[in-house]
Length: 372
Image 1: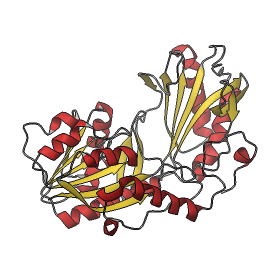
Image 2: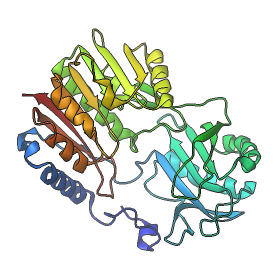
Image 3: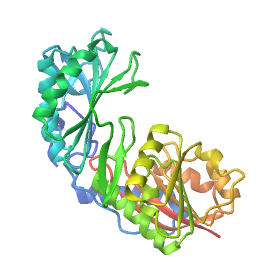
């Protein structure tokens, strides 16, 4: 992949830019194998799941800089000044077309970019998500609700310019610190979810829902988990950190009890919506993943997809439990390695790298473990 922004020194986020994709994938595989070491026997590794080297991101997290009428949408430099990256080559084709359109509308509507050094202005971030059905979720992060009327006036123009626009919202983040969004969200459209169709399953994303960066690789990740579950043939499945239900809904089937646990009520509501639409035998509850196993019968299969820090104390609970099978999807091989050391009775049978983030050192790793 070639990038004008990288070549000009404007953005160095893609640390592997200029390295051939085959070499990137080989280096990631070697690094992850070395990091996980003896916890994963060489025979357990499946071929890595590749990705497109460009045009793969379904989300754009755009910091806003510049001035009123001439905003920059991209990143901030070390001094807090805006660097415009509206033509970033990592975005999916539909998203790549939407970003400059949104930037133009922001310039025309008179929203004042937030000036980090001066601590003045209103618009901090523009967060865009693109679905496989060519629909858009657009979120505008403001310092205060004072500019909410301007964003309301922007909605019809956004619908006209990007016909697939489905959800538009304002998030209020009043604090002066490096936080992407705040606790208050105001949805300005009738629709409040963005359906993400993955392997024929419609997952509903609300404004603050987490979803994998690459839809194609997320689909491969879910298919792999489903294939492993078919080999195990569990009667009961517990999906911890279930989010909007991606793993749970892919594993649901006749004669199988599937329960998803997630701390976010918004994500659980989304998962329930998808399950109802599918008629899937899966239930979802708001709860803490670490505490859930206490005083409950052990399921045949547990699936975990934790944040970057890993499962932590939950690893000790899994080790002490009677859980027979575990599928662990990790966005941090380092925390995965630490968690595997805390579960010596659960041995890795299969492992696979999923290249969710080409042009960077980051990747997703999923392993299947069985109690010995």
